[in-house]
Length: 278
Image (cartoon, rainbow, N blue to C red; front, side, top):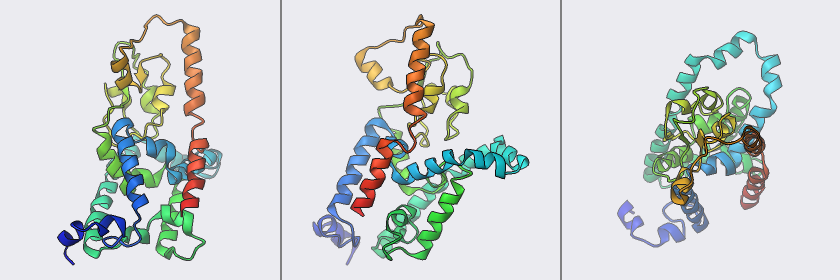
């Protein structure tokens, strides 16, 4: 059967004949995530993805292990600027993975990615339906999560690559107010995705997952914000003469929201919901 005949048939989407085991719900979920990304950016990656939540949970909970078990010279290498630059370069690997999956899936007419998908393995490893290759990838990702922040999301996730492209056109972006910015560099230093926020007016990076760390770490209220679209629509303006105590109170609230985000109610509920769907 030709691709054209498949694409012209209603059975492509409703009965999974083009890609076996693909249900209508998969397309509706993908459509919902796509719309969410176009409006707000990669909030799915930063706040709802179960696999991302597990990686982030492991990374934060093993902080003491990294400091005690990893030799000092290796810690310096991990924190080095060269490795950060290498990480930025490697982050483009996921786009190659995305292209490979699209090409191979269209040729083989099957869900080839399921063979190595750690997300699928995470929620199905006990069923016997998961290949050994997927389990090995999952274990590798979890081990790497001890040393690297969200390794799968940053370097290999094809969905993250696709949503990153969509995010470029999103309405909701992180912005920096040059007039209020004091050039402390905390926004860039606290970005887990190694985005140089302090050097940008608007963050267009495909790597931004809207975690809010740059916003919460900024010592000046309004210098870095994540509501630029709503600010323009509502005609809001940042008051440069905010009282010091008010600024501190706002920053404390931001810290409470963003820095305790990982494995939050949103993320954990998504994990259980995903397990239930599987």
